[in-house]
Image (tube, rainbow, N blue to C red; front, side, top):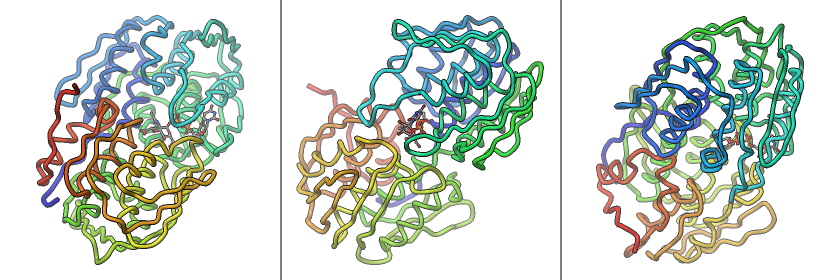
Length: 409
Ligand code: EPZ
């Protein structure tokens, strides 16, 4: 791959920020919102709650003048991220009835920490008929510890932070998630008149206010999309310039790429990525931010199948996020799973094959492997890819990839 690519806005920042527009009855304008099935879905959920929404050329205008507090199973079940409407509804209406998100292929993904946070603000929580009912006469600030089995929770922190913006008094979230997407949400909420301090650190303090107003905001670039293109450049032994990414949001990945003998060089506000020589093996353990992101694990595994030597990839965030292993093995990779780790014996050339995408990041890993393999690869169920990558095939073709979207038989 050769050439330059522009990074889109962040899916995982846009989803809670879209939900946050429910906190006010005044108009909000969001820019650089990626056009993805997930963001279009969140727009449908906002409309189902009564908000007026327009989405054009990356700009979303939302006016949640009058809204209901009920989000239907048929809508919510299709996208787990929609759970983050619960906090804004509870804060604004003092009641939220939201379908519990169903199972997910990468892990159980409970929402107990979200509910723990709401209860600490004084909400009564009832789970019935597949729905969570959260109600409160009034929300009152409190101190809560939101660390769980795998450490902090990203959407849990976002949900509770949004609920606390209109609570009486001060809320302190301890063991809060520090992801850049949480910081971007806090920036938007403060632009709406909230009073949030400490976002980006494990302790976030929210001083409740009586009302929030409309605001404008530009969503941060998608760090996982940027990482995916960086890995693809290295896997195909090309040279790619990445425009519009913020390297400080994925330092842990840059560090591992350098260990794998890949150069990630700043050039003005862009990054140039290419190999420094033969790829090297390295070990990875996924962790909450600022550790190595679980959303880049699969892509890096594809890269390590090409590097001579043994790489051990340990997944500490989601208990079953190795669905891509069997598909990479179909392409000739040598990978064994042992408990939370995958042992990748790299250096064996990959050969193209029909493979099945199981989730968003696994699908990106298979596209990368397909570009590095000999012959043709057919990645099926790419609706997973379209959930989180804006026009991935168009951008890749712009970098010289031979990739075509075809109708599944
Ligand atoms: C966000 O999911 C992202 N999704 C995920 O990205 C990402 O993988 C994840 O954070 C971790 O970085 C969005 O932002 C929309 P968590 P989230 O709550 O918030 C456990 C992608 O590919 N947990 O931080 O749902 C949970 O089971 C997606 O773009 C509890 O036990 O993840 C997991 O093991 C996939 N109880 C761990 O914490 C809770 O109440 C981290 O999950 C909540 C979470």
